[in-house]
Image (cartoon, rainbow, N blue to C red; front, side, top):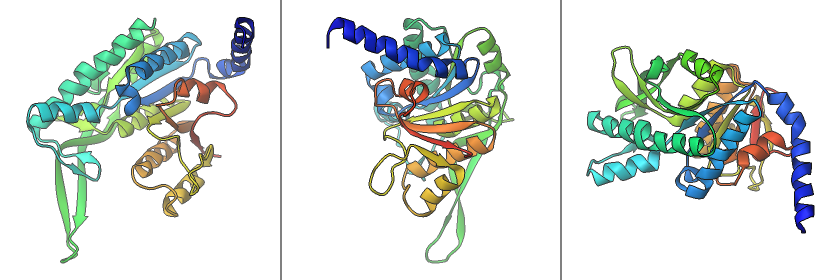
Length: 297
């Protein structure tokens, strides 16, 4: 391809994106960012540039990030043992201090810095700022296979969103600032809680009445039994994919988070592969999209 042909291809792409830019101008997108994409420097740089581009064309992006692998590495360095129940990290007082340090500290500021370096204006927050995320303790039960008695499991300082107060995010949007949020919350008594990033992002998307909620993960999206990407699902179809076993393992809570977000006011939720360069832009500005969109119809 000659330089001129390449330039024409880029111009054509921009022209085709125009209707989508007009459609989404002024709308809020909540993006959960994590997985391998967050640990890859080149992908992290592209993600930051994509977020700045969304802001530049009039969309209000809100980034919520995870950091499980980084938390695990820090706990290992500090020789603090950690375990999981149903995919949730059991979090004692010592562990929650490390979780907050890693999530609201190093990871959050790395993402903020990358967005600012790409030309944006980002500010880092945790769910504790402005009482953005009021948490309540997560409770899990487990049935003993011998006695058939249910036992309550104590996960420590693991929380779930009880209330979201989005006023601080609305103020930042009015000031053209991109919020980057660490999923750490606080309860009514002032205790700090570690909140699953997917769950936190879904709750924030619902509270903001977001047009789109994006879950960036490490797979292409929801796959059928032949491992082919399903581009679109209604809420009922998404539930059936869980019930018939098409969706399994870690994909089930992701689909459930998307269903909850759409039922609570988000126009549509999308599960897509954050390892694909510019996956967000492909999903938003092209007809074919890049992941699995879950909507009411």
